[in-house]
Image 1 (cartoon, rainbow over the protein chains, first blue to last red):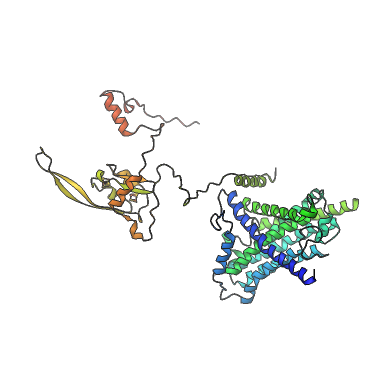
Image 2 (cartoon, rainbow over the protein chains, first blue to last red):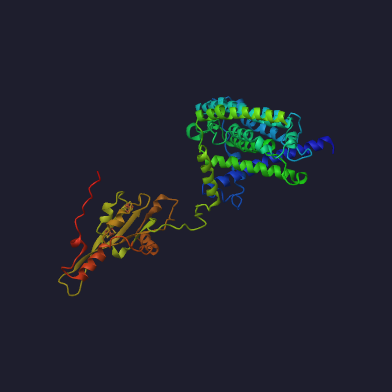
Amino acid sequence: MPLWLELGVRVVAVVAAFLVVPLIVGQMEHKVMAHMQSRLGPMYAGGFHGWAQLVADGVKFVQKEDITPRDADRRVFQLAPIVALFPYLIVLLAIPLGPGGLVAQPMDIGLFFVLAVLGVGVVAVLMSAWASANKYSLLGGLRGAAQLLGYELPLVLSAASVAMAAGTLSLPGIVEAWSPWWLLWQAPAALVFFISGLAEIRRPPFDMPIADSELVFGYMTEYSGLRFAFFLLAEYVGIVVIAALTTVLFLGGWHGPDPAHFGWLWTLVKVFAVSFVVIWLRVSYPRLREDQLQRLCWLVLVPVALAQLVLTAAVKLAL
Amino acid sequence: MPGQGLINGLAVTLKTMTKRSSTQQYPDVEPDLPPRSRGVIALLEENCTVCMLCARECPDWCIYIDSHKEEVVVPGAARARQRNVLDKFDIDFSLCMYCGICIEVCPFDALHWTPEFEYAETDVLNLLHDKDRLGDWMRTVPPPPAHDVLGEPSKEEATAARKAAGPGAATPAKTARPAVRPEPEK
Ligand code: SF4
Ligand code: SF4
């Protein structure tokens, strides 16, 4: 295959995944959340159990007027949703789906790259918050900045633990090195990574920056139409990305029966299972208060992550 | 155990998910309304004596009644009797708050609740139901629910029983002892 064709196929595949998987997760959220609350959720759009609800939502968002507030910093305001969405697309490039190079862009420093790109999210939050010229947006943005900067640390530390265990920074390499007993050995890191990942994508119970009962809609308050839809899409892609990273780093990615043929399937199954847990947590727990949020980060997650690093190093040296 | 509550929370949501949801799919499936549902008020015109009690008691003043008197010649009577004839009996359901006072107060059982609720209109003026429309709702009045076996007998039943027992018979009112409130324990 010529290089350009291969490149084209890979990019198209990633963009397709980028558009389809978050929609499936979104629909799953609608339905799972509804049934957990003893409701039915969307039932009409598309005929069968409302499967087309998110498509209908998308059509609705496209039709809506795109408002930019008069006092807003126009360019920054309009750019923010793209900045929120784009890093996730880039991250998806580096997620290995199966063995034997089933990854859009294999990289030796994949983990480093992924974590660095994920960190761009905070810029989007601050951009949208500051440029909206709205006090609720600003409050939400500042909360978001404090939260994202705080949780970045345990996220990186717990990821570093796996990298240390695997002895590589390449994501396929980490999956390659994974073995089932890591589930036990790296369990604290997995928990820390998952929780701080939740906080990174600002999912309930860590949705303090959005907190619709206090801040209208946080940094997204002034957005409407397609730009708002981008923020929403970013949230769902965020779930997919965090689920995928948890899968790849801690749950053994494509490991499962017959990984050579069904590796991609195991990865997808694990990604959806983790996404389900993300939704489940949203339904079960109330929002953390700002001080509880910071306390959890600095007094629980960071020490646990550091302890895990020590444990990983000790086991690595002992073996 | 710390964290027990977190686990319990997850268990509750997961259990709810596996159960049937309690949503009633109304436009597709008829809802099963509880007994004595208050949908709309029906008028049994023959029972109405135009006593105006309902119109006066209605907190919203949303019952409008007009009537005239008619002479009825009763054979054998010394002079002609007078009878009220209903000309207009309207209830404005855009004002009605479904308190049910009119129904309670009617001494002649001319007004009844019916569970029918699908009478939304695109023009608010059409919510004024005239006496034909109110009469038409009578078709939908359900039979009264059975008497609560543990409840007191109705006034009518008690009166009938007393009449049947004859004067001087023991009645609950005569045999009842004065209620003594127990002393609160110290
Ligand atoms: S239900 Fe209450 S408000 Fe409605 S007509 Fe009767 S008395 Fe008036
Ligand atoms: S209280 Fe009953 S009898 Fe009297 S006017 Fe109203 S409906 Fe008629």
